[in-house]
Amino acid sequence: MPRARQHAEARARERRTRLAHEAARLMAEGGIRDYRQAKRKAAERLGIHDDASLPRNREIEEALREYQRLFLGQRQPRDLRLRREAALQAMEFLARFQPRLVGPVLEGTADASTPVSVQLFSDDADAVARFLDEAGIPAESRSRRLRLDRAREAEVPLWLFAAQDLHFELTVLPSVALRQAPLSNVDEKPMRRASAAQLRQLLEEEPAEYDAAGS
Image (cartoon, rainbow, N blue to C red; front, side, top):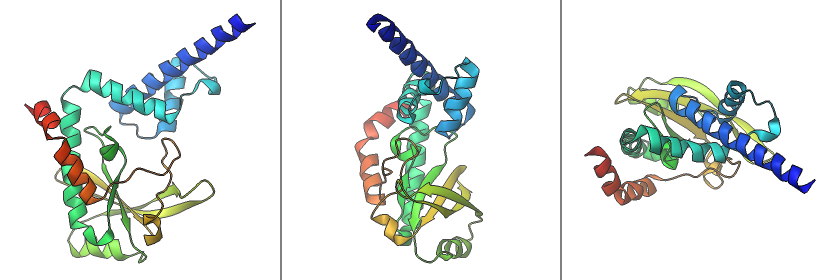
């Protein structure tokens, strides 16, 4: 029985690894950004229908980093650097809303199809819309559902616009959300966030790596 159990566990680990790498490939090549969609599509392609074999989002994220290192070479670091620099410019422009960078551009998994995701904070629901309009920036209004904590969800405003051939996503949250970040869809822990000062420091700490990538 122990031998059979070990064999079953080894097969389950193998399936999880295969699914994680296939989901990562789909995200890198197909522009899929939702981890659940990527893992379900990967399971369908590989013919694995055992929910217990589905990898965790963090496993897919690690597989995505490995895929980018192996197959995207110098492109991915350049795309990431470009988006981080653009994010800093946008955050300085939006400074009145205490912006915080989130998502793949901060985590380091952004590529050529990844938008720059920034959280803004205001108790005036229309303040960001007025600011963009006064600045002459055409933006599309949408909404996004976020998990505030393990018990609460909220539908919050989302503004989309393009600048310098890059796409930006501005999620607007109440000021109180500065104290506690919404939960990440990767590991269900509070999102990692960076202020403009923190992003500037991150960029200053990485020049050698990115200069080498761009040479």
